[in-house]
Structures are given as structure tokens and as C-alpha cells.
Image 1 (cartoon, rainbow, N blue to C red):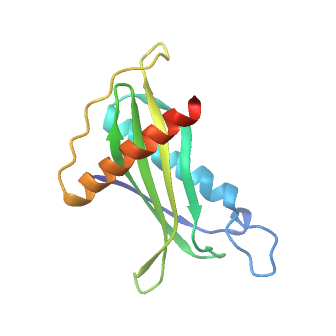
Image 2 (tube, one colour; image 1 turned 30 degrees about the horizontal axis):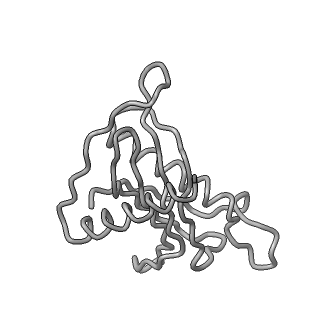
Amino acid sequence: MRKTTGVQIVMPQHCNGYKNPRLFGGQIMAWIDVIGAVAARRYTGSAVTTVCVDNLSFLKPAFLNDTVVQEASVTWTGHTSLEVRVDSMVERLDGSRELINRAYLVFVALDSEDRPAPVPAFVPETEEEKAEYRNAEIRRKNRMAMKG
């Protein structure tokens, strides 16, 4: 998949008040929104706004002084919207990575007057991209059903 990557070191201001300081969930959510928006902006070549976070799964914690690597990939596009998957991983000092969070976000591209703008069609190439695309279509149908 075509990826946008970001890296953070968990600092004291990013942690909650536990005895063994863990990354605050709201902080990783902010990082997810930013890297997702960067991926969406790069893909569309325009400003974007977050429409929804479709799914956000906290799988494992990150702790003070951990390195958090995030990879964002476009998984699906509509006429003016697109879905982006963000994987957050803790990277150990030996270079190994462990998935701690996965999120799917939907963005809408905006024109110069802040109106929804058409986005380039996403054409999945790899088997992983094709599977993500199919799953993104299911998530979209579920979002539309919830709207009523």
C-alpha cells in the first residue's frame, strides 16, 4: 500500500497518571487524525476535513519513552470522500514493531471555498489493497445504514 509514515517518542506530557505512565488515548487519537489527514491531503492534493472515525481499536498500550510509528494508507475513495487506515505500532530498540492501535477514518476533500471536492479514484493494486478496499466498502455500507 502507498503509505504515509510518522514517528513520535512518548514524552511525559503525552501520558496519563498511572504509576507506570502509559500513552493517553486522546493523544494517540490526535496523532491518528493528523497522520490520516496528511495521507488524505497527499492523495487528494487538497484540504480535507475529518468526517468520522469509523473504528478505533486499542490493542496494547504504549509507555513513556516508547517510539510510536504510524502508517496511514488510503483504502477506498468515493466521489468526494476517502477512507484512510492508520496503524500505530511501538517500535523497539532492536527495530521490531508491535501493533498497538488500528483506526479507520473518513475524510472529505474540500475546494478553495470549503465545499466538497471530487477525489481521484483509488485503484487497489496489491492483494492487501484489494482486501482493504472490499472491507472499506462494507464499512461504508454499515455507516450509511446507521444514518438511516
